[in-house]
Image (tube, rainbow, N blue to C red; front, side, top):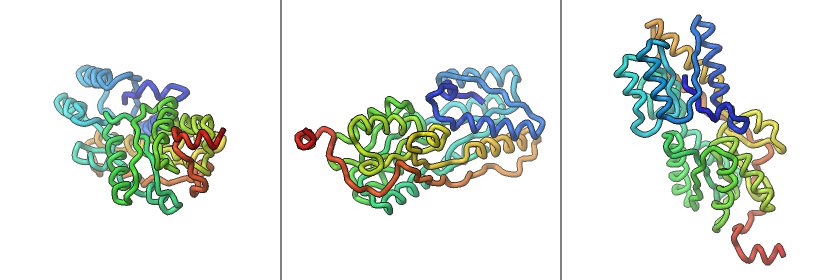
Length: 288
């Protein structure tokens, strides 16, 4: 399994760290070993996968974070290298995989926010080179359109800086969101800090929800609301699927892992005092 370099950064979310741990737990129990390689770009990952396949260095690979027209599944097929995908239910035809439903998860989260009283909700997604980022944004836009809201979207790069910039951009024009969903924990934490700098009260004026849980979310002051997945279980399922393929006894083609669970925590609440646009001159006059 190739691992993004950012996983080993202290500022990174811990999603794939936990996936890798689950993969190792399942594989070792089946008598298999896990080889991981840190990569910086998708091109580097493809080169490493090709090298592993041509040298016979590994027997099966795990593919994740697939993009549009991603060459990895096809290339592994050309090289006769078995693989397991960690992806979305929309990718079930690509091969054996552990799959989530990003669209359903987004709809459930937004429905819960609406039920809590939020009518203007923003979304900050990860890079749109990733299909799961695209599908989350599409689900968000469809939901907002259905509920006749004003879409407030911004594309981040999973860094705290991009979360902070998103707050500046999204809250510039009316109607200002009373809740923003971020595609990872680091962007959500950066957004919280920026909201504090701007004098925006969380959660009274702005609720902040991160897509995945992490120790950083749990230890944050206050603890961050999250849409919690089960990354360790994802790794376990991927390891078991891989073992079945290696033994030539596949019992399942795919595993759909459980729906994400919303943990409201302290950065999510019903809106109490919506904030005026950050760039609103009347707001500056009132504050002065």
